[in-house]
Length: 333
Ligand code: SF4
Ligand code: MG
Image 1 (cartoon, rainbow, N blue to C red):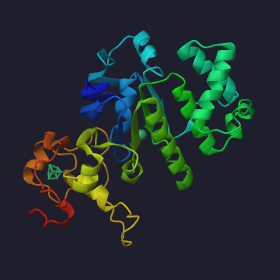
Image 2: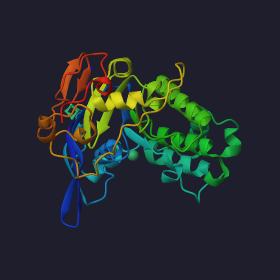
Image 3: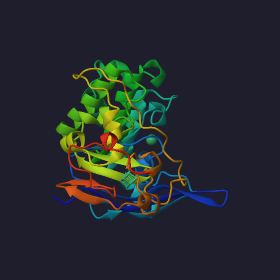
């Protein structure tokens, strides 16, 4: 099937004090209708910026290059009117902090009615009925009583559900959920992720789940893309990524995941930190932290290559399936 959304060669540069730093560096990604894609990476890897760029939500000092299409509609450089027609209606986005989407001075019922007016032209009794349906869809019991509540009267989990309801008001084809559960405790987190999965199944919308935590996406997506310092470093179907990761960075993230069933082990975080935007080394951005870095890694950026069916990785080495970079002898210094 044709992709719903196709990102090609996306770049984002932030201008500051006459200097420019690259936050997204040539990302290619496709999203099929109805699929769930996880995008994983540490803070500063470009995973949020990619989608803010697609929706025209970056500040004016950002320069965006490349292409993002939904169906055949080009979003990069599109007129404000075009982007208004896409935001909320075709692509909706939710965030870690519900106050980024919910207005503290308005009752939630009013906010949902406004969203339904804006996106679907509903009014009066039709808007009220649709509001109750949305709250029901996001698992809010006693919806009618909740309409008069202000966001501050609701728990974190309930606010998250209201924010999801707002995002669903425009019946989007794609929902981008950016760290939607990071601020919540584990039980509520699992409930919200299950809710997003069930909404996806019921509506057929596609879902992009952005997280710094590989564990969060593990059970909730079909496919995973891993980003590092503004680049896509690995992409595979979930079982291939979790069972046969080929990039040293992904392998390091996996090694640091606590196992639910296996024996307890010490969590070995990857040493070092992600380079700041614009400060990535000229070759492979991961080279300063990679146990296998070779001289060419310092100077030549590795291309994203197919390493299996629907499996891509950006590494000069072709590590054998089942072998972890972190267990191999180190490259000679
Ligand atoms: Fe490590 Fe080199 Fe592969 Fe980068 S290209 S991940 S530095 S081996
Ligand atoms: Mg982010």
